[in-house]
Image 1 (cartoon, rainbow, N blue to C red):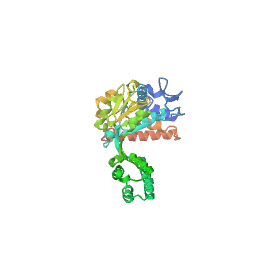
Image 2: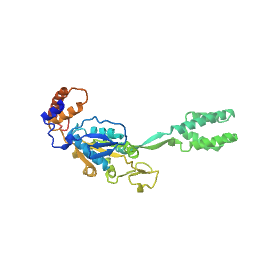
Image 3: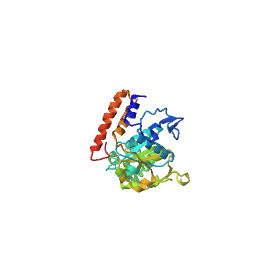
Image 4: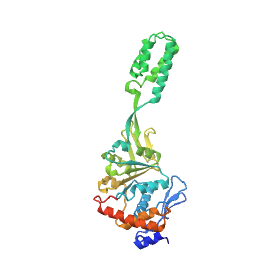
Length: 352
């Protein structure tokens, strides 16, 4: 038995009634296994060795998260700052091979960060194609000594789309020009359609990382949901047992579902990817609405109440780092006790 294990016995760290103390996470036959009673299939079957050491409360949370993953339910994870909420989800995503996308909520987060936003976009390719056509057309007009060449050069050099459109709309500007130039003029007129005035720009609805994750099968973490805007309530339908989501901000409206029978239009209706998973974290459970709590698998990570809780976390993290066992013990004892005293004296009890 190593000195670290002896230390845990002497300090009482092994005297945990919870049998999770002896359970191990492992990779077996392309599955993440919680000993032999929970298995979750890996998305990416890379050769992965689990080196991360988890505390008893974290193991308990992982066990419940795996149940939620298997049940394909959204997972709400709460606990004091420093208990490892985000860390656990990041580690599981890495082990399982899922891409984890995070929406970090703060006082400046808006509904656009959750769903997406309309953005004014210049169609660079169309503008460049038009410039090329105008340049070639100008050279041809110069060769035939076109009478209005000066006016044409002025409006095309500054690329005033509305004035260029007016010029090509006026058929009097193209009387007595060769047939091939008349054909070119009509082709340029077709390029100009939809580009006059502000139409040279268009609005694109840029989907948020949440919507992209639903389409691509990534994991999404809504971190610190207690800072989320009121519009977060618009995601309630996504938390249901049969999740759906309507994106009214897009034109036409987009519809997401897990039910294939509800797909009516392949342009606007999308299946939620089977690998998509939704996680929510909060350090202040009192600020979470009852509606969200009731729709998620609600997991609370137990807080650290004694010096040994911190000592266990620190000693677990330092195992396999090359540090001698006796040094790990000294570090775990001193730093664990220091963190405990800091938290004890803090005005905000959820700070470590």
